[in-house]
Length: 340
Image (cartoon, rainbow, N blue to C red; front, side, top):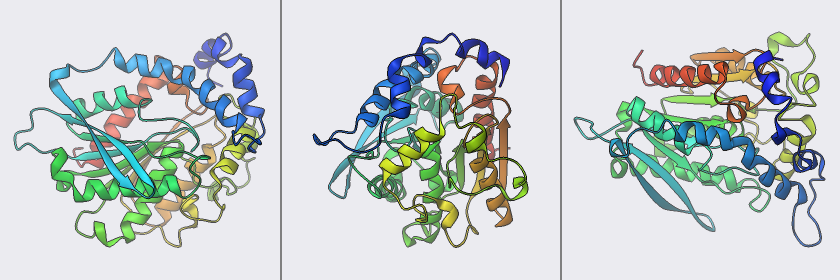
């Protein structure tokens, strides 16, 4: 593992607390009171793990006059969800491309606050509207509610783009982190096949450390041990924790809306940028997905952060490779928008 990460990780109290250990081992089943101990523990433990990331980008926020924030409450089956839209100021013709973003959190935790400051920075720097989606979480809202919410948000953007100063002709990007990139990868397929998007196709995918299927090996790495076994004890993401989160999601492994590997075709998808981490149980998912898309004729770019575990940039956003990840993402978004 990377020495810079290890030097910080080994003495960090956030990774030594009983609640973090309990959250990675608590049983996934509900109790007689209808509560899920593992979920409650994980949600508590997760907050300090992303606090530095939020603070890091809060300290780098652009001037408040350079953007505005709008919240849209959109109807979904059985309720409403919130979209947080960050709209830059100053476009000559008053319109921008858009990035629709889905947060991570293993389908059971996370919210629109975790990436909020970073998205504000990206919106102003890249002159792009960001739409941050607060989809509902398992297990309270089991599969397929979260993916249905997410698809409803994407349709809303397609049908209401002008209301948030978006010109889809300038770029219609989707993206996410971890479970959020799983959602984005699924939505790329659903949007490809849905008539709502026939005249406003998604034009790019930004997939950070994606999860696409837990039981497949990258084609060209079959002789190697699987990353989920190599790094089953983490740090940060463990095999047991991942399996429990998938169990809490409640999705069949062969349902393409949970495991996009199972879509019958991956042809015709928009170009994709993929990141993966060399010391991450999901490393092979990223490798697999790059190969699957390339084999289907999809233009891809990928970066692997050798020696780093899952979500390292959330825990330690100040380290050199976390700064590089941010730089890589900005450059990739420019590429997805056709600016480079």
